[in-house]
Image 1 (cartoon, rainbow, N blue to C red):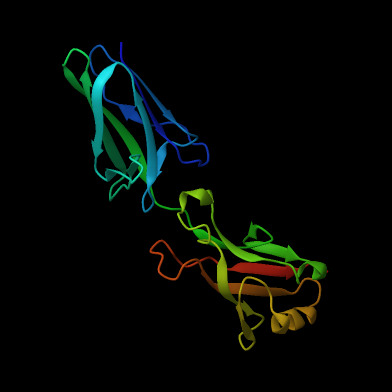
Image 2: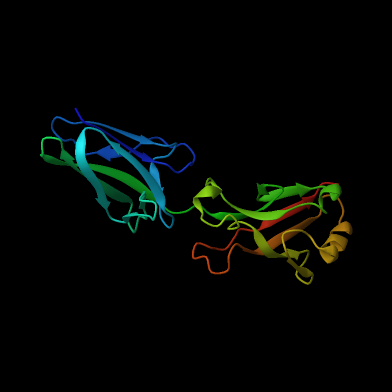
Length: 217
């Protein structure tokens, strides 16, 4: 009896499985999803497939293709779900098609981070000099992106008031912003916004949510 295993290999967070498999007579199929049950719009979702006791098989579907290594990927388009079809030729020459349906989700929001934290962050004076400003796609791991520098910040603005805004090149506070932060008291706030990150031409870049910083001492 044939057995087919389809694995979506993105290392995302756990979700309850909600994928559907079209029943085919005299078929035993197993579908495994690596800690997720969705494919994400806008990025290549890799598929690993093993089919036993068959002459040949191929995978087709909307957005399904093979890369240079011969591995299959899905780039889902519009809609809430996408279907993947596995066309199988058995050892006796007969053919069958197995169907899998996966939910599609958009990419999570991108947030600015300070000390690896998003939103409102408490910063102590001895942390200012070495503090790194970055970005993060919440609930989404980095290794799906081809460019490892996708989340690296190129520049940002530090807003102390409506009239006092300092633009910084790089991903750390410069001397000008460092001096201004030194004037603040415990409990004072400033904002890090207008974060420019990643390669300049990356189509996946979106506005990053700002960081609200409160002085902790």
